[in-house]
Image 1 (cartoon, rainbow, N blue to C red):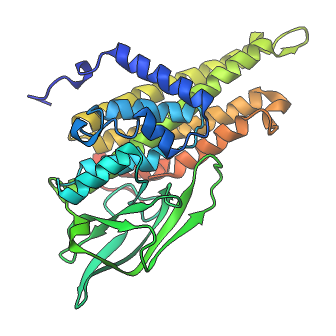
Image 2: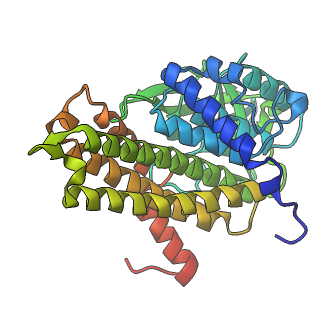
Length: 368
C-alpha cells in the first residue's frame, strides 16, 4: 500500500525467532497453560498499546504465538483472549470503559470471550445478536455458536446490530440475567467452546461500543483475523506432524532398515513438505495483509484458511498412517493433532465456504 511503512522492518527477524523460541519453550513445559499464564508471559497484550500494559506490537507477533500454540496442541485461551478479545477491543472507539477492560484483559485481571459467529459456515457479514429499544432501556437477543473460551470467561463481547442496524460490540457480564452459556462438545479435547444465547438481556448504553471506522469493515476484519489465526494454528499442527513423522521414520525399522529409506515413505513425506510449504506462503501473505490492513485481506484470509486447514487434516492423517499401528494408539498423541486439525477446518468458515466466497469475489456468482 502506497505511503504505508514497511512493517516487515518494524521488528527484525531475530526478534521473531526469539519470540518463537520463547513461546515454544514455555508451551513445552506448560502444555496446559491457562489464560493467566499467557497474560504473565505478555502474550495477551502483544497488540495492545503500551499505555494499556501491552507491547504495542502487531498481528505478526500474535500469529507466531498462534502457530506455536498449534504446534504444541496447547490449551490456554489465546484464540478467545488475545486474537479475538484484545483484537476486538483495539478495533473499537476509545472510551473509559473500553480502556479499563483492555488493561484488565492484558494483565489477566479479567477473562474475556468474543461471540461473533452465527454458525460454522459463517465467514463474515452475519451478526448474531440484535439490540432493541424498550421503555426500560436497551435489551438484546440472539445466539452465537462455537464461541472460544466462553465457558470460563467473566466478560463477553457480543457482536450485535443496534436499533438502527449498525454493527456494534456489546459488553456484558457472563452471569447477566437472560444470558446462557452452554458448553459445546467438540472433537478436539484441547480447547473449549460454547453456545452463547441471549433472551431479553438488558444492557446499559455505556456498554454498547462502536467500531473505530467503518463498522461493516470492522466486522469483516474480526472474521479475517480469526480465520488467519486458525490457519496459523493449523500450520503449526501440520509442521509438528511432519517433524514427528520424519523422526519416527528414521528410528522405526522393518526388514532390517529404517522405514524412512523406503521410497514410498520418502515420497509421502516429500508430498507433506510441499503442501506445508505452499500453506506457509499463503499464511504468511494473509498475516501480512491483516497486519498492514490491505484492501484484499479477506481474499488472502480465505485462501490461507481454506488451504492450510485442509492441509493440516491431510498431513495429520498421513502421519497417523506412516506411524503404523502405534499411530492409532492413545499414547502416540497423533490423534490429538488430527482432532485439532479437524476442528480448525470447521472454525470460522469451512474450506468449502471460503472457496465459495473466493469464487464469488473473482467471478461474481457461483453455480448452485
